[in-house]
Image (cartoon, rainbow, N blue to C red; front, side, top):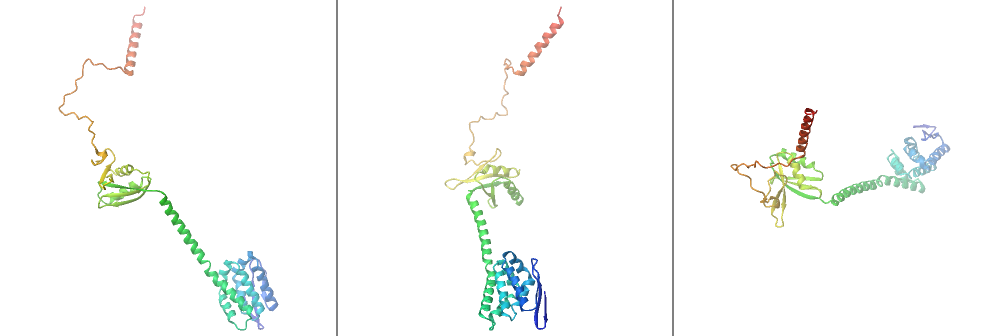
Length: 309
């Protein structure tokens, strides 16, 4: 943009975007025609944003607002109002250097006619609202989106029932055992969270309903140093322990800990050996039948070959 003064007349040279021809302001007639060309572009929604982003054109129109000719100023204000039809253009115009200052001067100049003051005030109001109006919807949309996401997560968690399994850890020593226990439990599909109560050597596991306590105990048993028993309470609030696996110690207060009294006693070390009857017969098996058949066949062949005449 080039600005100069020649013979007391205002001269401004700039180019319009979107392949628009060059325009020069040398006298009143040319200035009106140039602004009319920009006004025609501003009335086209497809070219409106491109014109608003051209700092050369907008800068020229801002300078025209200080022109003493009321007709030229009116054309410039109407062009700006057309550009304000687009929200993106309003934000660009408001941030342009000198725009708000020129509108403030036009609204306060006593020599301006009523129509110029009204146009300037209307344009200023639109530009002021442009910076505030988009913020509230964008912020609300963001908050609504985050609230919806959090609500959806809460509903998904509440929709699935969970159960709590309390395990008593046997063989727990230090922090390394706790970390090992946590890693083993997390390998079980359906485990949601793990909480350790080290003062009571207990582990509280929240799982899906289909996860069995036996699977958790077997997973801990893979550590080779720790075992786990399930802690349950009866109707009276008394605790009992349920162990899983053949080598686990079972609380005798539970139904799983009752001894089986139907099994026979073990033989003592000094008991007599079992006497086997010499006349006892063995039931022949298929293998014995094959061996005997093979022996008779060999004997028959030998006799045939030896005594043939």
